Structure formats: C-alpha cells, structure tokens
Length: 113
Length: 110
Image (cartoon, each protein chain N blue to C red):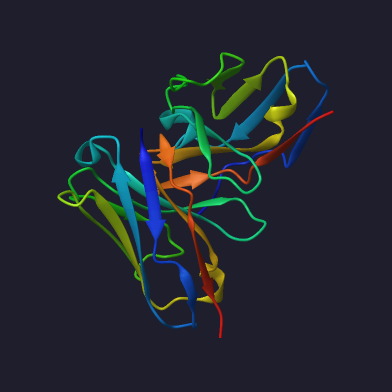
C-alpha cells in the first residue's frame, strides 16, 4: 500500500538549515507531483511547496520562497525540502503528500535557540 | 498569501447532516475547484474529495462535495462520532501559482 515516511526533523537554532526527506513506496512515485505541507502547533494546515512529477516545475508559498528548496530523486523514490535561514515561525510538523491523495505521518521541526 | 474562508466550528447532532463551506474567489475555488481533507487530532490529513469533487476509493458515500460559484461545500450525512474532526479545504490559486488552504472547520458531533 502507499507509504510516505518523512525524516530529518529536529531542533535547530534560528538562522540554521535543515533538510527533510520523504521516502515513498507502494505507488509509481515518478508519476506524482509531490507536496510539502506544514502545521504549526495548534494551527491549521499551510501549504509549503510543490514539485512536478519530473522535477521540472517547482512552486513555493510566499512565506518560504527564497529560503526553502524542494527537490526529488525519482531513482530513490524520495522528495526533499532544504530549509535555510530557519525562523521560529517555521516550527511545525511537516507532512509530505503524493498529490493530495496520501500523506505521511509527519516530522516535527522546532526552531529555537 | 490569501487563504480560503471556512467557519471555525460547526456542531450537529448524531445522524444529522452537516454542510461545511469554503469560500474563495475566481482564481481558486471558482475556477480550480477545491479539495477537502479530514484530520483527526494527532493524525495526518486524509483526502475526502478531489478538486473535481470525486471521492477517492474507500471514502464513505456519506461525504459529498460540490461547488457553487466561488464557494465549495462538503456535506456529511448521517453523522457518526468518528466524523468529529477538523476539515480543511484547499485549492490551486492560478494568480498566485500556489496552493491555498482554508483555516479549517472543527466539526463537533453532539
């Protein structure tokens, strides 16, 4: 069955970087656009970024544009998000999604000094 | 980025029908449709309806989605205790080239 497993979260100081990974299985990864969505503690869902099935198109929320970079490796069935210049307001659970069809369990990123 | 508008909370009785709304504009809901996701506390979101208002396989027929103008709706019939959750709508905004979410509606089943 479809499985998405995020990893790479943790506690990081403001201004530092972190890379999240999402390993996919159970479906044809190279046919799906992939999303990152986040949820701050006690808040709603916020869309972060999208990468097309072949990696040729990438889109970002204004709140992360210029700081976050989404990428994918179809040979490894994995999507990434490189997060630079992290801020306290980036603290959230980060979910990856295959289109909007399926979602991982999420990984928590805490930005704090 | 401007988001979609959802009522913060809706309360209905067991076995009743709840209709949740999601209002956007002609750049998103009105032209692109809206997806609906359900999220139980402490769990990841789950897709209930695609942007074309079709249900993914495995989703109960009690969930139906529709759109009128710039407002999308999710109707849940025969409310069950397990329907108590947060519900989010989302749409692709063609002017922003970004997905936007509503703030979510907390559904309480009395």
